[in-house]
Image (cartoon, rainbow, N blue to C red):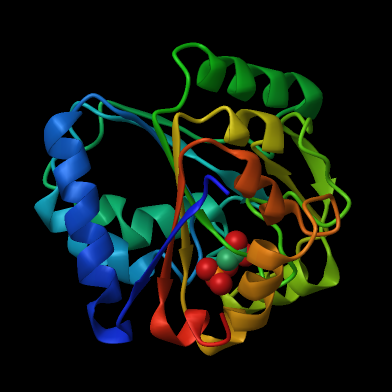
Length: 233
Ligand code: PGA
Protein backbone atom coordinates (compact mmCIF):
# COMPACT_ATOMS: atom_id res chain seq x y z
CA UNK A 1 0.00 0.00 0.00
CA UNK A 2 1.59 3.27 -1.08
CA UNK A 3 -0.61 5.41 1.15
CA UNK A 4 1.13 6.59 4.31
CA UNK A 5 -0.67 7.07 7.60
CA UNK A 6 0.52 9.56 10.20
CA UNK A 7 -1.29 9.53 13.52
CA UNK A 8 -0.90 12.68 15.59
CA UNK A 9 -2.14 13.55 19.10
CA UNK A 10 -5.39 15.47 18.90
CA UNK A 11 -3.99 18.58 20.57
CA UNK A 12 -0.93 18.70 18.28
CA UNK A 13 -2.66 17.72 15.03
CA UNK A 14 -3.41 21.18 13.54
CA UNK A 15 -0.03 22.61 14.47
CA UNK A 16 1.78 19.59 13.10
CA UNK A 17 -0.04 19.69 9.73
CA UNK A 18 0.41 23.48 9.49
CA UNK A 19 4.15 23.09 10.17
CA UNK A 20 4.45 20.43 7.48
CA UNK A 21 2.62 22.70 5.08
CA UNK A 22 4.88 25.64 5.96
CA UNK A 23 7.97 23.48 5.27
CA UNK A 24 6.44 22.37 1.95
CA UNK A 25 5.77 26.00 0.92
CA UNK A 26 9.30 27.09 1.88
CA UNK A 27 10.61 24.64 -0.69
CA UNK A 28 7.94 25.33 -3.29
CA UNK A 29 6.62 28.90 -2.92
CA UNK A 30 5.10 28.73 -6.42
CA UNK A 31 3.19 25.53 -5.71
CA UNK A 32 -0.17 24.87 -7.33
CA UNK A 33 -2.44 23.84 -4.48
CA UNK A 34 -5.97 22.51 -4.41
CA UNK A 35 -7.74 23.22 -1.12
CA UNK A 36 -10.88 21.94 0.56
CA UNK A 37 -13.19 23.73 2.96
CA UNK A 38 -15.26 22.40 5.84
CA UNK A 39 -14.59 21.81 9.51
CA UNK A 40 -11.49 19.60 9.24
CA UNK A 41 -9.00 22.03 7.66
CA UNK A 42 -10.25 25.05 9.63
CA UNK A 43 -7.74 24.83 12.53
CA UNK A 44 -4.90 24.21 10.06
CA UNK A 45 -5.93 27.26 8.03
CA UNK A 46 -6.13 29.36 11.20
CA UNK A 47 -2.45 28.62 11.86
CA UNK A 48 -1.27 28.57 8.23
CA UNK A 49 -2.94 31.83 7.14
CA UNK A 50 -0.81 34.18 9.22
CA UNK A 51 2.40 32.11 8.96
CA UNK A 52 2.67 30.89 5.35
CA UNK A 53 3.47 33.12 2.39
CA UNK A 54 1.09 32.15 -0.42
CA UNK A 55 1.90 35.23 -2.52
CA UNK A 56 3.56 33.16 -5.28
CA UNK A 57 1.19 30.21 -5.02
CA UNK A 58 -1.76 29.28 -7.20
CA UNK A 59 -4.81 28.12 -5.27
CA UNK A 60 -7.68 26.05 -6.62
CA UNK A 61 -10.85 25.60 -4.58
CA UNK A 62 -11.77 21.91 -4.60
CA UNK A 63 -15.54 22.18 -4.93
CA UNK A 64 -18.58 24.39 -4.58
CA UNK A 65 -22.19 23.94 -3.52
CA UNK A 66 -24.99 24.96 -5.86
CA UNK A 67 -25.98 27.85 -3.60
CA UNK A 68 -26.60 31.53 -4.32
CA UNK A 69 -23.66 33.89 -4.01
CA UNK A 70 -23.38 35.12 -0.44
CA UNK A 71 -24.68 31.95 1.22
CA UNK A 72 -22.37 31.45 4.23
CA UNK A 73 -21.99 27.73 3.48
CA UNK A 74 -20.56 28.31 0.03
CA UNK A 75 -17.07 26.92 -0.22
CA UNK A 76 -15.70 30.22 -1.54
CA UNK A 77 -17.16 32.00 1.50
CA UNK A 78 -15.66 29.39 3.85
CA UNK A 79 -12.23 29.59 2.20
CA UNK A 80 -12.35 33.35 2.52
CA UNK A 81 -13.33 33.28 6.21
CA UNK A 82 -11.06 30.41 7.20
CA UNK A 83 -7.90 31.14 5.21
CA UNK A 84 -7.83 34.05 2.78
CA UNK A 85 -8.96 36.72 5.24
CA UNK A 86 -5.94 35.94 7.42
CA UNK A 87 -3.32 36.26 4.67
CA UNK A 88 -0.94 39.21 4.67
CA UNK A 89 -0.92 39.08 0.86
CA UNK A 90 -3.37 37.35 -1.48
CA UNK A 91 -2.24 34.28 -3.44
CA UNK A 92 -0.82 34.92 -6.91
CA UNK A 93 -3.85 33.19 -8.44
CA UNK A 94 -7.11 31.87 -7.01
CA UNK A 95 -9.37 29.71 -9.14
CA UNK A 96 -12.89 28.81 -8.03
CA UNK A 97 -15.83 27.05 -9.63
CA UNK A 98 -18.65 29.34 -10.78
CA UNK A 99 -21.93 27.59 -9.96
CA UNK A 100 -23.80 30.54 -11.51
CA UNK A 101 -22.18 30.00 -14.94
CA UNK A 102 -24.70 29.81 -17.79
CA UNK A 103 -23.07 26.64 -19.12
CA UNK A 104 -22.00 24.46 -16.20
CA UNK A 105 -20.42 21.76 -18.35
CA UNK A 106 -18.27 24.39 -20.00
CA UNK A 107 -17.39 25.78 -16.56
CA UNK A 108 -16.27 22.31 -15.42
CA UNK A 109 -14.09 21.91 -18.51
CA UNK A 110 -12.59 25.38 -18.00
CA UNK A 111 -11.66 24.56 -14.41
CA UNK A 112 -10.27 21.13 -15.18
CA UNK A 113 -8.20 22.54 -18.06
CA UNK A 114 -6.73 25.06 -15.61
CA UNK A 115 -5.76 22.32 -13.17
CA UNK A 116 -4.36 20.11 -15.93
CA UNK A 117 -2.30 22.93 -17.40
CA UNK A 118 0.69 22.56 -15.08
CA UNK A 119 -1.00 20.00 -12.86
CA UNK A 120 -1.61 20.15 -9.13
CA UNK A 121 1.43 19.90 -6.87
CA UNK A 122 -0.46 19.29 -3.65
CA UNK A 123 -4.13 18.58 -3.03
CA UNK A 124 -5.48 18.74 0.50
CA UNK A 125 -8.69 16.82 1.12
CA UNK A 126 -11.15 16.22 3.93
CA UNK A 127 -12.87 12.86 4.31
CA UNK A 128 -16.64 12.94 4.04
CA UNK A 129 -18.59 10.92 6.59
CA UNK A 130 -19.88 8.85 3.65
CA UNK A 131 -16.40 8.40 2.14
CA UNK A 132 -16.56 11.20 -0.40
CA UNK A 133 -13.63 13.44 -1.30
CA UNK A 134 -14.50 16.80 -2.73
CA UNK A 135 -18.12 16.16 -3.71
CA UNK A 136 -17.25 12.86 -5.38
CA UNK A 137 -20.07 10.94 -3.72
CA UNK A 138 -20.36 7.15 -3.33
CA UNK A 139 -20.84 5.64 -6.79
CA UNK A 140 -18.07 7.77 -8.34
CA UNK A 141 -15.29 5.97 -10.21
CA UNK A 142 -11.60 6.87 -10.35
CA UNK A 143 -11.98 8.25 -13.88
CA UNK A 144 -14.63 10.82 -12.91
CA UNK A 145 -14.00 14.20 -14.52
CA UNK A 146 -14.79 17.55 -12.93
CA UNK A 147 -18.56 17.79 -13.03
CA UNK A 148 -21.93 18.70 -11.65
CA UNK A 149 -23.07 16.18 -9.04
CA UNK A 150 -26.23 15.41 -7.04
CA UNK A 151 -25.42 15.59 -3.36
CA UNK A 152 -25.87 12.65 -1.02
CA UNK A 153 -28.21 13.38 1.90
CA UNK A 154 -25.26 13.26 4.34
CA UNK A 155 -23.57 16.00 2.33
CA UNK A 156 -26.68 18.17 2.40
CA UNK A 157 -26.70 17.84 6.19
CA UNK A 158 -23.04 18.86 6.27
CA UNK A 159 -23.98 22.04 4.38
CA UNK A 160 -26.59 22.71 7.08
CA UNK A 161 -23.86 22.38 9.70
CA UNK A 162 -21.81 24.97 7.78
CA UNK A 163 -24.73 27.41 8.28
CA UNK A 164 -26.36 27.20 4.83
CA UNK A 165 -29.30 29.56 4.28
CA UNK A 166 -30.64 27.07 1.73
CA UNK A 167 -30.05 23.33 1.51
CA UNK A 168 -28.01 22.60 -1.62
CA UNK A 169 -29.17 19.79 -3.91
CA UNK A 170 -26.12 19.76 -6.15
CA UNK A 171 -22.60 20.99 -6.46
CA UNK A 172 -19.55 21.07 -8.71
CA UNK A 173 -16.43 19.18 -7.76
CA UNK A 174 -12.97 18.62 -9.08
CA UNK A 175 -13.26 15.05 -10.36
CA UNK A 176 -11.50 12.04 -8.92
CA UNK A 177 -9.40 11.76 -12.08
CA UNK A 178 -7.72 15.17 -11.69
CA UNK A 179 -7.52 14.68 -7.91
CA UNK A 180 -5.65 11.41 -8.44
CA UNK A 181 -3.39 13.16 -10.96
CA UNK A 182 -2.11 15.47 -8.19
CA UNK A 183 1.58 14.96 -7.52
CA UNK A 184 0.93 14.76 -3.79
CA UNK A 185 -2.25 14.38 -1.72
CA UNK A 186 -2.79 15.00 1.98
CA UNK A 187 -6.01 13.58 3.41
CA UNK A 188 -6.93 15.34 6.65
CA UNK A 189 -9.06 13.33 9.09
CA UNK A 190 -10.04 14.30 12.62
CA UNK A 191 -12.52 13.25 15.27
CA UNK A 192 -13.99 9.99 16.46
CA UNK A 193 -16.99 10.48 14.12
CA UNK A 194 -14.59 9.78 11.22
CA UNK A 195 -12.99 6.69 12.81
CA UNK A 196 -15.21 4.08 11.18
CA UNK A 197 -15.13 5.58 7.68
CA UNK A 198 -11.33 5.98 7.93
CA UNK A 199 -10.96 2.34 8.94
CA UNK A 200 -13.12 1.22 5.98
CA UNK A 201 -11.30 3.56 3.62
CA UNK A 202 -7.92 2.09 4.58
CA UNK A 203 -8.87 -1.56 5.01
CA UNK A 204 -11.93 -2.23 2.87
CA UNK A 205 -12.15 -2.80 -0.87
CA UNK A 206 -10.97 -0.07 -3.24
CA UNK A 207 -13.92 1.05 -5.32
CA UNK A 208 -16.75 3.46 -6.02
CA UNK A 209 -18.72 2.61 -2.85
CA UNK A 210 -16.10 4.58 -0.91
CA UNK A 211 -14.47 7.07 -3.30
CA UNK A 212 -11.68 8.02 -0.86
CA UNK A 213 -10.46 4.41 -1.07
CA UNK A 214 -9.02 5.22 -4.52
CA UNK A 215 -6.36 7.30 -2.73
CA UNK A 216 -4.76 3.96 -1.84
CA UNK A 217 -3.87 3.54 -5.50
CA UNK A 218 -2.16 6.95 -5.62
CA UNK A 219 1.64 6.98 -5.45
CA UNK A 220 2.10 9.81 -2.97
CA UNK A 221 -0.74 10.21 -0.48
CA UNK A 222 -0.37 10.89 3.23
CA UNK A 223 -3.27 10.55 5.65
CA UNK A 224 -2.90 12.94 8.57
CA UNK A 225 -5.25 11.50 11.19
CA UNK A 226 -5.65 12.64 14.75
CA UNK A 227 -5.71 10.06 17.52
CA UNK A 228 -9.50 10.26 17.80
CA UNK A 229 -10.01 9.42 14.12
CA UNK A 230 -7.34 6.70 14.21
CA UNK A 231 -8.82 5.11 17.30
CA UNK A 232 -10.15 1.90 15.75
CA UNK A 233 -7.25 1.23 13.39
P1 PGA B 1 -15.72 18.15 7.25
O1 PGA B 1 -16.14 17.68 5.81
O2 PGA B 1 -14.29 18.55 7.17
O3 PGA B 1 -16.62 19.34 7.52
O4 PGA B 1 -15.96 17.01 8.18
C1 PGA B 1 -15.31 16.80 5.12
C2 PGA B 1 -15.91 16.54 3.76
O5 PGA B 1 -17.11 16.36 3.66
O6 PGA B 1 -15.15 16.49 2.80
